[in-house]
Image (cartoon, rainbow, N blue to C red; front, side):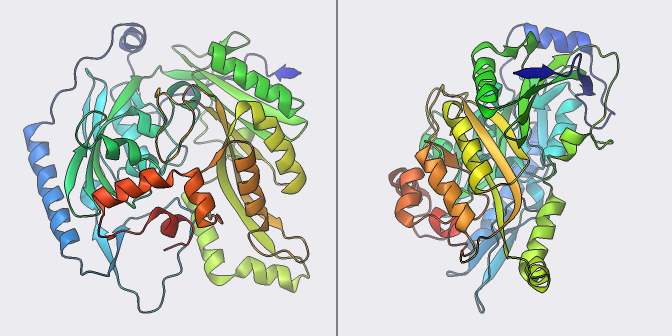
Length: 457
């Protein structure tokens, strides 16, 4: 059963309310012929960028052997926390020169973007031209390079895939100190396809050329309630097949599960007009506030982990210790209801975010091998749960990892993982990664994927 919220709500597709979009030109772009060929980067910008690349390459080469390399970034959206061994040497590379949009080409509907550019800045730059990236993760401080090397997802992902699937070219500083441009059909095509889900263990993206799509001035949202996971998953499969739900076009789709008998899907469609608007950046709308991961939340988790405050407080109150369960997993839509029932029974955390996705590409990406053409649902959950008596930290996370594997799914690696090395490489294509590591970081200057994502090095 489903309950519609009626006529729904309208949201401005411009998130700051300062960009004027010409509805006529936007409508023509969405319905008209394809974009023009991409134009080269303007000479002045190209020269300045090349100088920044040469400076960073020189700094990387100068790092002494045996010294760990980190990027000096203002924020992080990873929930893996490294314990730095005493006496270990670490060099932080200044990558601030790569934190801006280099060029937006409205005619070709492409942008050349520094790898450390946040989506907040990227969206600001593209919306001025009535365009947006194909996929815009909800956290403003996620960088484009981070979303490509560490994967990303949002409510356009059922229609347009994942952020790396709209990348046309990547300029990468590899682990062995070379700067290469990787595309789908050049001599570095293996790196182009193997860079997603490599988490900075093969190199760092310095610039990326990406596709953009036209926006309309507004997005019309409708909310549909479901009373069991099975019906909700059937609706997602229907949207995947038809591109709409109950006559409402599905340009955007995501949802929330509060309990097994209260689930919602939010379906959004671009709109040229709106009888009223809601600004979710300025109001605490309930379903928006529930999706409250942020860089602030990450900072609070890091502070608590460093000082053990919540554990000490629970102990003082006589409460059982709690385990952080902060994960995103992708499950085939046909097994999604099974996962939700498992999660409610064995983990018991709510709400759970639902975000459908399907690869845009007709071939799998080696290090995160989702099946082309298949609809998956990303389930996101970010919180803590009490540990059963006698169970150690990691108990619930291991349950999740085992269930994901049993259902034919995959787990994102931005948070803690507990896989054995054998389990890990079976899920994340060990042979393909080994070949890439040998070619682009044969000396092991950067940490390996297992060492970084599971061992926390």
